[in-house]
Length: 300
View 1 (spheres, one colour):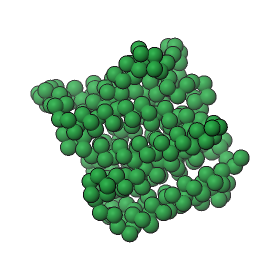
View 2: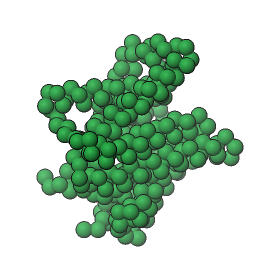
View 3: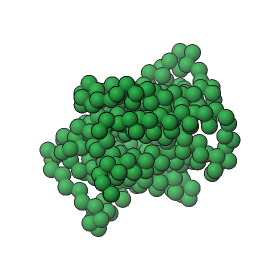
View 4: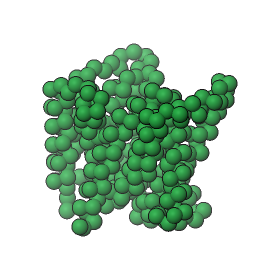
């Protein structure tokens, strides 16, 4: 199997994991706040990374200079990405957030063209917008309203999350040639672990209820969700996305993120028995057509 095929499989795999992660996030948020959820998620991820390293199943080798070089990535993802997203969801619905999240490939394309000099044909751009249109169509059909003043503030916060995600894609590409995917993932995870735990514990302390940090850990469904989010949706997807971006380019791989929307709908239907409507099918067709077209027309 050549490197290009492996990269496509990596892109498909991380899209599938992210698609199902919304299901587990929804379950986890039933037991804990977004900040505590993130703290537990990155605690699991950090612990698993340490165990894997100590048992020599993975190798992480970083100098102080390497860590300082990779640190800017962690500022944009997970820190700014999740912080902006969490606060945005206090002002806008998940449907509205989904529409804006679909803009990540467009932001990535613009930044990749400007800073990485990645070239995309006019036909590729058409298919990219087709994929984005599929996501927007689904969420608009579900209903979205950006008309109020508070929604406008949420809109700006969510745009901050989208931009942080796109910048992370660019940094992954630019630094991926110098560092191994697992080394970069390790730095990002440990920064998330320290930051989100500090914020969560401080928040509970100020509320005078520090035990609330530990309360959800007694729930089996919560623990299963956190293990999925911490191991698969953090460690595995972090490594797979960096691997794919380095070999296929930030613009190409970012489009695969929209495939997660399709898989989220499938997961909701199969596991939560949520209904599937005609607009889901139309939107999913546009998304998949866009991804296939974007990659089939990829310049050699």
